[in-house]
Length: 498
Ligand code: BES
Ligand code: MN
Ligand code: ZN
Image (cartoon, rainbow, N blue to C red; front, side, top):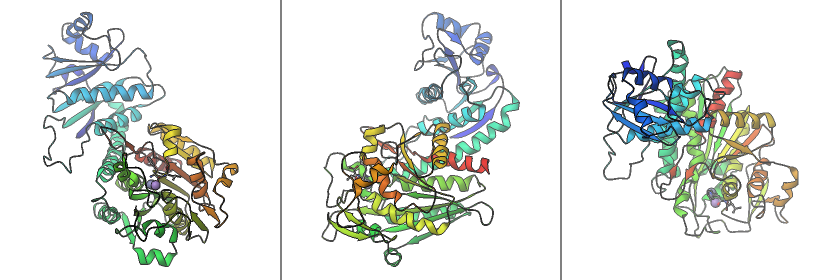
């Protein structure tokens, strides 16, 4: 979809559809009123007759409204409040996009970004509108024999601002929003691919492909022999049962000054998680193809940083592997030595994410990081705790946690912090090794983070558990692209603070 930012009167816009708001009860927003005035009260008459009263969720499509140059006028219900919340605004925008895609309009002019949102500026409203438009129009058809979806889709969307004064900030919102949208789309595409296509090798090729489209990226892929040499036996123990070779992908973006410390992003890249010998039940096991969403979002965030030429350095470290049962697979009770030298008793081979992340966290030390953030579909317990609305956040440094919570809030891709108190650490005690890879049923998300924290002692570190946010289950299952908006927002905020 093509986007542009513009200001001007609604009745003068030559377009397939004007999108304007109606408030409760039967009140028109300023742009809708302007149309109404030129249209001999056509809109207010409709409302008066009871076709719509302005509740959120309602929409009314009008054709050939007199006095306008538009083929259609789409009225969207905006609710009662003069100042609406983030959530309300986002749902109004989404309703508008869904309603317009049901029409034949191939272009539209959207006045909804002129609504007042509590505490939000034009930049925020426009960027959200653009990201939501892209999100709603996403389709994944790579594996459909008919590659084209609906041809009646919207091709051009103009987002309106009240005056020319807001145009520069609008352009900035468009640049940032487009980079984020592209990254979200790439993340969703990668994650939606089935595991027979999206293998560790496929992830590595994807990362290498990014260096061809983004000249400011560098990529290095380490194969099994290199991993052995580094002593990544924890990571390798997860790959043992699989025929697919493991890869450690290192993707570097350099945009900062010489000698600056990079932000390191670590992404869990389990391209399929059967559970290994501690095998998972059959129910919905197909969804374990999404167990590489951390990896995909890290690559997405880095490509957005490269797109925007952000003035900082970012390193992505992605351990990629399958987790399979097999004759050579790791068995419950096996003890492995991590790259850090710490030994791990693998009590449950289904707790494989932490086993690959721990070696990546040790590897991160060599970059002298400003901060390390790992992103992983790590625990079912996180879905139990937070559902699908917030990613779990745990950290060993409160300012870093604060920055990530704030970034989540402002990008509408929220996280919620869980405690990482010492009291929990003893749940992973082991009689045989330095510690175990599981800590029992209680506080599963926290004990997983406790495990990781033992490899992250040398730098500021935060962990995002995205098990509940990275994809949607059920009939309309698919990857969401989260937490790309949060990560990119964090990087943008770092640049603004520097
Ligand atoms: N990839 C899963 C976590 C997961 C489960 C994400 C369900 C989304 C939905 C992870 O590797 C895993 O299997 N975790 C185990 C840990 C347990 C064995 C301590 C879990 O959550 O059951
Ligand atoms: Mn698992
Ligand atoms: Zn997993």
